[in-house]
Length: 179
Image (cartoon, rainbow, N blue to C red; front, top):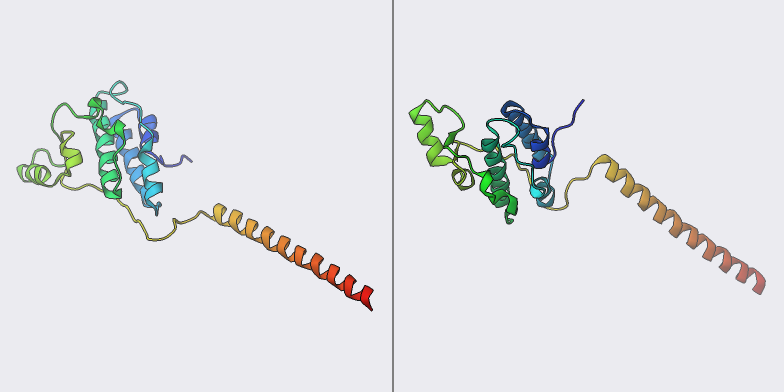
């Protein structure tokens, strides 16, 4: 069983064709749903993905999609986009329409509604799936992190009780000697 890519770098590293790239990009979007903090989501785009232009014929278009998603996600997070997203190789040579390229209506919708990060890279899509569910407060912890935190809390509790017991025994001996 393979795991979903957790970063755009992993998406690029695992992709050997445009079809694989699309599947891995969708998997990465599914992974975004799991993150509850801005820092977690930003970490998925921090590392620069390798260029795909040499791996398959549509690699330049895939490189543009990576840059567009990195910039778009950064804007949603209220952070600066990573510098790698603006590399000259991250722009599609020809205008690329996501869905229904043959339909004039859908092309017009894509031209109107594509986010700036995508338009800047010659990518036109009527909608962008960015499934962020950021919650206020602390980020969610995995069961393993919770177990580790609880074990540390238990250790501190036992140590404090042990110190109290030692202090009480000393006090008891002092009182016993006074009698």
